[in-house]
Structure formats: structure tokens, C-alpha cells
Image (cartoon, rainbow, N blue to C red):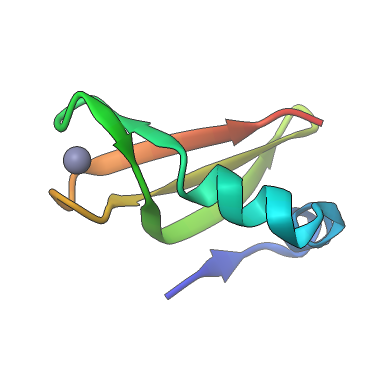
Amino acid sequence: MIKFNKKAMQKFNQIPDDIKSKTLSNVYCSACKGTTTIVDFVATVDRNDLVLTGKCNKCSGEVIRLIER
Ligand SMILES: [Zn+2]
């Protein structure tokens, strides 16, 4: 399940697909102490940066990925 507000959706759609998939599978999880894939995320915009808040696909812990413009 992926939730976006309108502004976040527009920003997310501007990211090329290859970078998008790389970004989503390159998220640091502090519980796993390594790189993981973010799942079930919510996208918001904070000061022009896109913030994805979701879950680690390994441990289901919360992970956050900031995408700077
Ligand atoms: Zn994890």
C-alpha cells in the first residue's frame, strides 16, 4: 500500500524509473544495520525534499528515505 499526497505524487513521478527503483531498494535500516528495500511507504514533501516513510522489507521496522531535489 502506497499513499501519496498530491504534491508528493508529482515529485515522485518526476523521478526516472531506474533511479526510483534504485532509491527504494537502497534504504538504510538501523535495526538491520544495513541496506534494505522500503515497502508500504507514505510519501510526503518537507521543504521541497521528498520524504518516504515506510517499512523495512526484512524486519518490518520503520525506515525513512529522504530524496533531495
Ligand atoms: Zn530492517
